[in-house]
Image 1 (tube, rainbow, N blue to C red):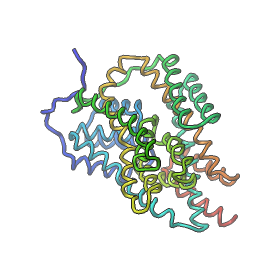
Image 2: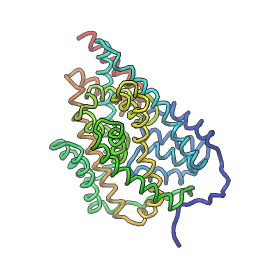
Image 3: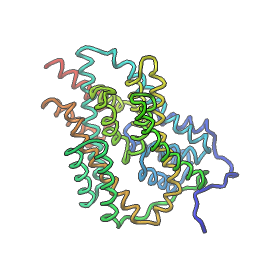
Image 4: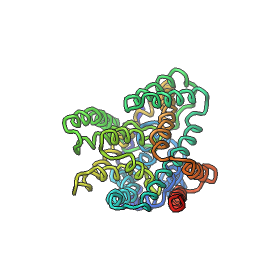
Length: 406
């Protein structure tokens, strides 16, 4: 009997897209703390309060979205909306959760070039130190979860060594591929994956989503090569980054930085200032793309370029999540495939660890005072579990005081 995740399409809807949008918007306005914290907010809202899913069904969706590239919290939200109210519900869930932070990041991109002077420089420096603290905490947390044994820790260290020695986007891909091979060979004793809820997605729809994912991944770079620094090239950069990011939004940092900064789209300072600002607001970290699209846009084109960067950043993750609804059944039956993905996740920790040193640490930390500020921010996150907004306020105020009494 053929396995499928297709739901009966004549089953009555339990809700509408408007309801999904309102719930997702509340989450988008108040979900601080990164993708792992977002998944906690989702569980409380969608499982315990709204009862849209059972705990086991929610666990299956989370497991799927953590094993495929893309922003896990946004993918889970999209699939929850799809499950509850069909395709309109899926898009409403994504829009409600994404728009608040995307609009703030777009506005910051427009305002940042007009903010000048020593005080502004100190604020931007503080935001860079936020990036140091937040990424350090992400590396620490991900290492505990994704590298729980010596084998996966070794794969992470190998990936970091490759990137710190040679660097570049191709080496990042090679590090992830090496993690997959190492995981397939050395990480075979993993537990079976949890199941999925019934979804209104047929096998044909999943195949179309996978085909579109692969076609865009091949066609966009070719089109971009013919028109560098164009809107198509921008779409290609963000689509590729969204398609290659495993392990959460922080991992997108080295991919985007290598694609944008060395090629002259924008400076390291502007890149890291926007990344630091992204820590101060709720919602998915991938809305950093809205800032970057506006920051590199030609005059009067900022809204369009920001929207294109935002959409193409999220699009591959949504497509692969839809395709993954079918692939997940196969993964559940194949220990080698699960082991390979575990190796990829371990390599992701190494990629992010290398990015923590270069460019984040090298660009933000200029002396002992900066070390003290960043270390305190890390401890406030890791030991005291304070929300990122508090860390942003601390780092910015500390940077202002340091500039005042320098």
